[in-house]
Length: 403
Image (tube, rainbow, N blue to C red; front, side):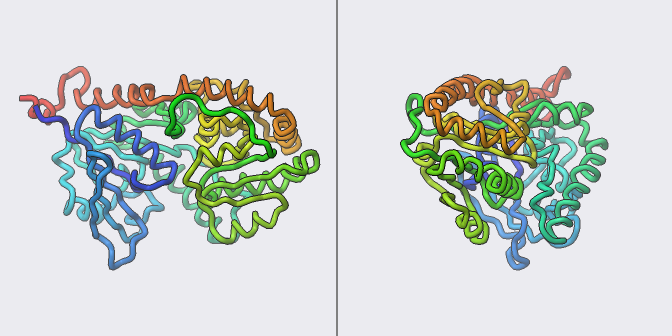
């Protein structure tokens, strides 16, 4: 019997090194338990001459089809979740959407922009369902217009379309329980983000480094991350250095030249840029700080350090994405107040034994709770429902394959 054919549509290729690609790869692994998976990556932002160009690669046994898209006009632009029949026709030139038994949209945008076949069941991995712009970071009319247009799309256009058919018949994955509750009228489930696991055997080395250091790791050109770093450097870092003059602040992640120059000018700040060896980088930090004030509210950057044996200090927003999934209140100290945030950092820098204790307990909690079996079990339930067709038995296409 032929295995079901599953298409994952995304606009960020799972071959990328970005953190968002990690969730895509987890989805591919979970979906591969049910059938053969192809990936269609819509690469928006291509030059006019490159529109429609296709390249193919493989991620293990999964075929990854990359389609270059020139963002011409309102409907074809990635900013708005409006159906583009022109883009759909371009996709159909290369991918036969009708032959799949299940289509999974990574992010809500592909499911909104493409006119997907009505007879093929759809699962949407929503992601960033409730996004708050980093208002303090917005500089100049262009940034403000961009933020306001995103709010118009997310809170007006997309939500209006979700109330229409066929969107109501789809299953939606939400990263947070608060998002699931906000869209209670949709068939859905909570599929939490998982931090990438280190490639090593056994537990990490929990020993704090000899030199005191704090670290922030993430895509530093992402505005909510930039806002978090600026807030920390402006209001927290001077207080930390006053009590621990030898402390360093390490910034790891892809960063533009102007941000690198601006942050490198701050005393005792070292901008590492993109790093290949996360283990060696985390080993340099007494603690990882995650002072997020905006964004979508689910931050694997707060959990990843724990898997590497490094404790975390964060703002309450950071842990809100994992409420009801894993309890971290007693292992990740949080506050929104800059003075209190500085005090928490200082306490760990001056008390390595407490830092090690928090790291050990945090590692045990995350390691035992947020793993692939948990993730795949949630995917399994949704996929099985769509492929089997619920109480009425198998969907016609799956039944034909089984015949």
